[in-house]
Image (tube, rainbow, N blue to C red; front, top):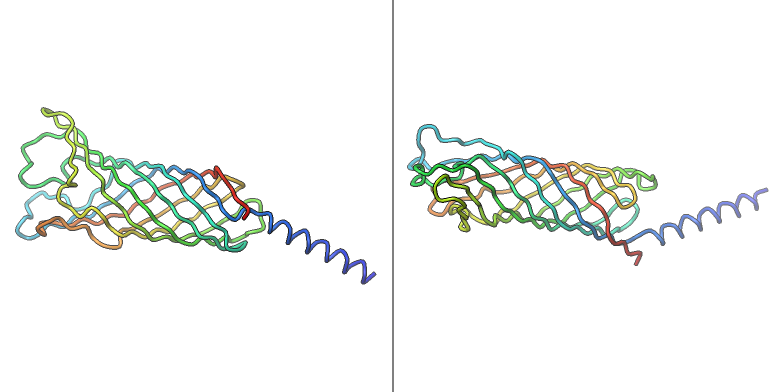
Length: 220
């Protein structure tokens, strides 16, 4: 009887090892996100004025991008993301003080982001795997597009004089099933973005829901 149990144990162990060897080591896919951002602006004493808005949010934020995930073992993996996002905000919140006479109807910010980090699976053997991950990266302010009442579409490629690149950190909670991943992500700027000349500075944070789908999976 002991020999039978040993044989059964060996078979189960071999099948488990085979399954792990066949599990995809690399995954490459696409993802989309939708959520909201919150900003805090501080003006220099010489530039502050009555009625200045210092805390505000985006009306909506959406984005899309690509990701990769490289499995280290059943519980841990390395992941990276490259994405683009549009953030619609209330007009004039980033404005310079000499632009108050214009009447803007809308304002959309275009941003890019690159980040990487580690993911930990709570129940790696389950069909539905819950996970938590943390990432650090870079947020790039590409441009801002305004719709003005008289002059129409105006593109601000100098991003109103603010620093274009800012470091960012994020944490996510989610679930993965086969090729599909659904998660909720919170991210926060690690430093403020200062305007040239020191007139003001802005920091941001955001919360988005994300859906990702693996297009390619590689086992080696």
